[in-house]
Structures are given as C-alpha cells and as structure tokens.
Image (tube, rainbow, N blue to C red; front, side):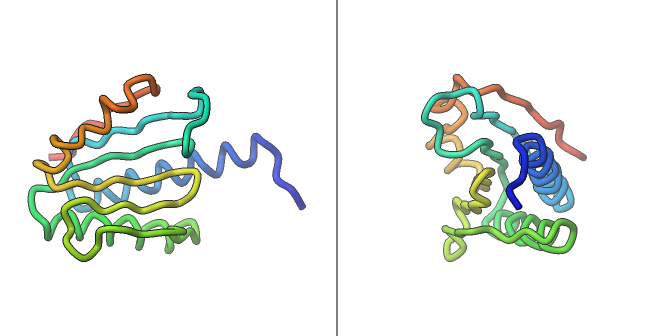
Length: 127
C-alpha cells in the first residue's frame, strides 16, 4: 500500500529527530538541519550537518546515529561513505543525508553556504 504525502512527511520528521538525538547522545557539535524541500531539483529533503573534535568522535557520532535509527525506528542508511578516515562521514537515508565532519574539514567544504537557500535550523549544543 502506498503511503500518503503526510505519512511520508511524518516519517521523515521522525527520522530527522532520531538522527539529531543520536548526534547529541555523543556530544556532536554545531548541528544544523537544512530543509531542502522547497528548493527545486534538490538531491534530498534534508541535510543534517554536525562536527566532531577528533576522528574518533566523528566515527562515534556516525555509529551513534546508525545505532539509534536502527534500534528506535528500524532504519538503516542506504549508503555510507568516509568511515575509513573519519574526516567526513556521509550517511544517506535517501530522504535525509547526514554529514559528520571533523571541524577543519567542515570549515573547508562549508556546505551551509553552498545550500544557503535552504531553510536552516541550528540545534543548540548540549554541554
């Protein structure tokens, strides 16, 4: 049975919230949610961007997100990249793409400016 637009939107919102929780569980920093749904020809509905202070933390954030989405909402990323060097890890959940950066790498690529037309939500750091 096909899901309605509203059901898909709710599922995507739950996925975004679960991913943000997974990042916060291991003290991911500077979390930004970019809503790309209003942009023509966007590659996905949402980007979630965060930073870690070390390669170990970047890897830990990715593992936390994958564990939380698997356990709480039975979702797994469709594609993963960057787990070998842990400077920029990408987790692709199709409607939501997660970018987890080592801080200096994030500054270099500056995805937030690249997608500046998106609706942006900054999530406060949990300290």
